[in-house]
Length: 194
Image (tube, rainbow, N blue to C red):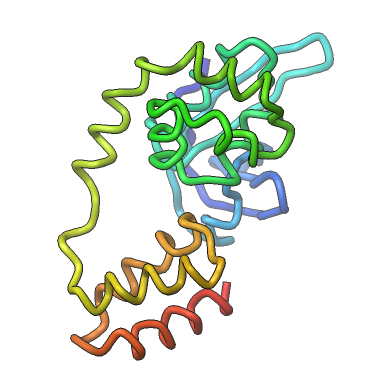
């Protein structure tokens, strides 16, 4: 029924946001509620799910994220809460690539996903996310300097997730040309800020 909501983010909670649209607050469950800021004007792409227990809205930052959510829901054994948990644990591009490559073991790291469910995700979705992966690869950041590349690899080696490192990469790209050590220090400062 809804495609998106244009409004102001009124509240942010650990698993949902409230979007104020002309005085009406819509409670929208989101995999990344803290990607928004209270008071921010935003377009939230919506999927409405009607069950016996009620009507629930799920919201995403992009139409592509919503599409991936719907594809996850098409997998036997994956419900809305599981799909949100999977999307919250990894960025959509990495998740789509893992599914396309058939990385069952990688998928078992997501909350509530065992080997059987991971295999089902690959079985049902492999070959169906190619366009999504191509689109994601076409929007990657411009070539980074060798120093920044070394710093990003070092942050991953220190145990930070790809999602965390991807989140701070745009800020590091804007830094003046500097050494790998300086990039690492700045990256750690950004990661610790959260």
